[in-house]
Image 1: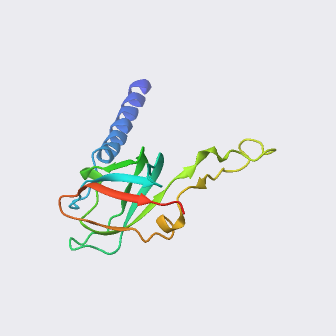
Image 2 (image 1 turned 90 degrees about the vertical axis):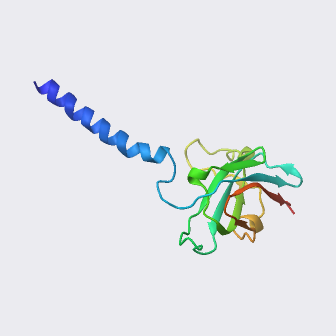
Image 3 (image 1 turned 45 degrees about the vertical axis):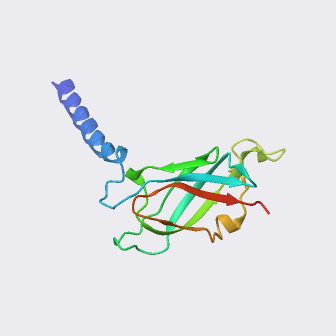
Length: 150
């Protein structure tokens, strides 16, 4: 009898955990009027191999939402689906890409420090970004950022 009670407790726990995990799999879970956003990023005329793009609202928009978002960049492309997209409005854009080939300094044992990759993108496009874009109703499918390393 103890085994059967134990099994029921575990199965209930698994059902509760599954119920909590599922909403996160299918979108944002809010009622914000989100829109898809996709585009390309180049650095010195070449597609950015890898990186990340973040969109920060400059203010709450006419819908009353101020939601940030972003995506990874691969081979110069990024794509944010409608389910986790951006609400129409104006956004400050930050773009990052680290040089993973920097390596560990000689003489330092593995695990002794957290390696920080050298940022390839100038600060004027990320930490001190002045890049902006407006996301209209209907979203964007051809947003383009042409960055210069110097």
